[in-house]
Length: 83
Image (cartoon, rainbow, N blue to C red; front, side, top):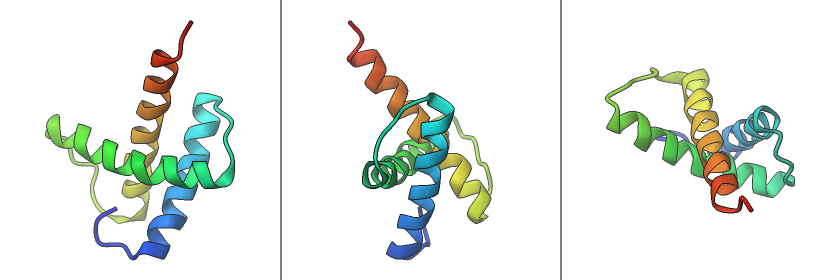
């Protein structure tokens, strides 16, 4: 979440984490949702950077990238813990 303050990053991370939870039907608490959204933003930026894809700036673009990254993290978690 480049260019945002720590408080704003927490808010956007929380929003992205909650959206990703609903999309992927994955239940966590509020703190884990915030962490999932913030780490998801890092993962999303990394993956999109590798693919040379740019969503654009702004709050909406940041949330989209964070949700995408959080969904990737949830998918990988489920893939690793599948039995």
